[in-house]
Image 1 (cartoon, protein in one colour):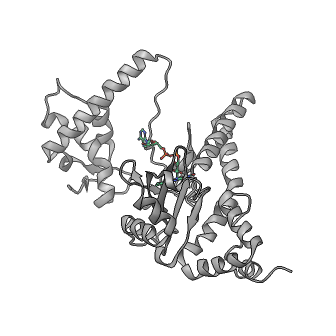
Image 2: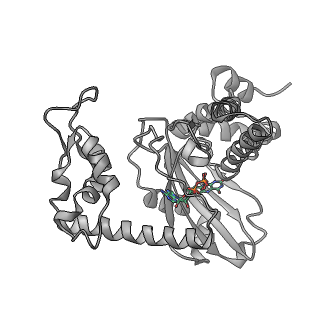
Image 3: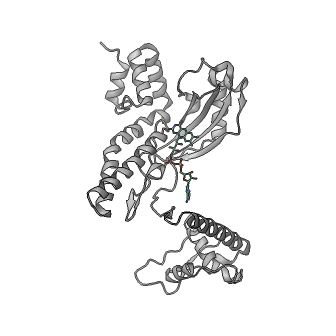
Length: 338
Ligand SMILES: Cc1cc2nc3c(=O)[nH]c(=O)nc-3n(C[C@H](O)[C@H](O)[C@H](O)COP(=O)(O)OP(=O)(O)OC[C@H]3O[C@@H](n4cnc5c(N)ncnc54)[C@H](O)[C@@H]3O)c2cc1C
């Protein structure tokens, strides 16, 4: 990968930092578009706006056009997206184009990864009735789950979650194999079942962290804002909730004739109000990191219906995981209730 070096002399007021590795890739597409005419005739593709931006940057982007195949790939993709956008706006003249990838992400790594598949197994219908979440020493740093969908189909998967830079080196396919070996219902589901497609994985972004929540003209909702719970990996409902809060902030701002800054402030205040719940799930994630804690809780849950209810409540969101793994909270959970 070419390293983009600072231009000489640097533009006043901007740092002449050399971009390397991942950060260098951020400018490669721009470099290819700005310099495409050295590879492809201007009559076939030309991007004056990319040239204007490139000229204002304090970097020498010439290395970005060294790889002709890369430039052709960028140009083909840009031309395709231009054509799709032109067709869309021809059909929807009042449509709005929104630029995604708006530079609001501040994280380098996700908060976790998860992998799941769908399996049909009629023999398991009625045997796995609700959401099963499994913590086990052998699944250290993660957990497994199974839940029934309609028509004898089950969703089965594994996830690992971690805090910030504490990313464990775990192979999710191996974790899945361990889960389906050690947990009897998972083993039976897989052995007698028919996989409906391959296992698929994706990153998780959690704890309402890792991104700015807004900038002028833009509100960030869903996982882009880190809207998934760290401990459980539950994110669909949370993503919807942040989307609804964004819509509410916009609608109320419009009704009250508020400007952009007030709409942003309203939305960010709503996310701040949710943050303590996300922090509680982040705190509870210690269970994923310390299987002995899980062992202790599971042992206690086997002997106490109230502890079982409390743990299910955390998954079902009727009970906050706050204090679940603090010294006081553990003590309350572990001691028999009066
Ligand atoms: C294996 C796995 C299992 C999960 N299981 C559950 C579960 O059982 N329950 C639960 O609640 N949560 C679950 N989650 C978490 C849940 O999937 C996410 O929290 C949720 O999908 C987030 O929704 P979202 O709309 O914010 O983001 P996404 O679902 O990621 O949607 C974002 C969309 O934007 C598109 N996109 C990205 N960049 C661009 C771009 N530049 N231009 C155009 N489009 C773009 C993406 O392709 C994607 O379609 C699971 C996650 C994984 C990985």
